[in-house]
Image 1 (cartoon, one colour):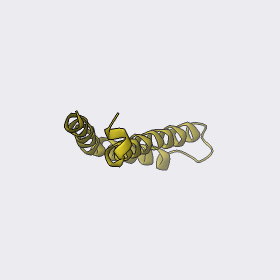
Image 2 (tube, one colour):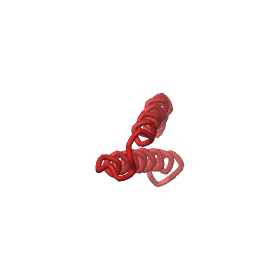
Image 3 (cartoon, helix red, strand yellow):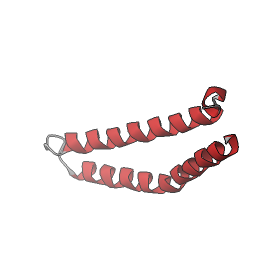
Image 4 (spheres, helix red, strand yellow):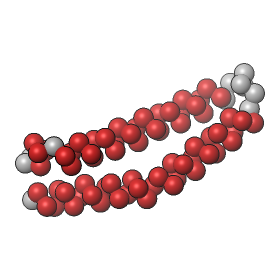
Length: 77
């Protein structure tokens, strides 16, 4: 059971590693858009906000996986 959970966690971490390139590409596209827009443009705020939300969720999920992997309590659940 423990081995299966650890394998699932490692698989999800591998998925995150694979998707990092997509996250970086999204950042580059957002930065490119923001560079082209006037700072007073009403589209600037939603682009920044959405990018920040994505990063926040990304980091939260990665931290949860790391915590789950290293926490002995979660291994016994």
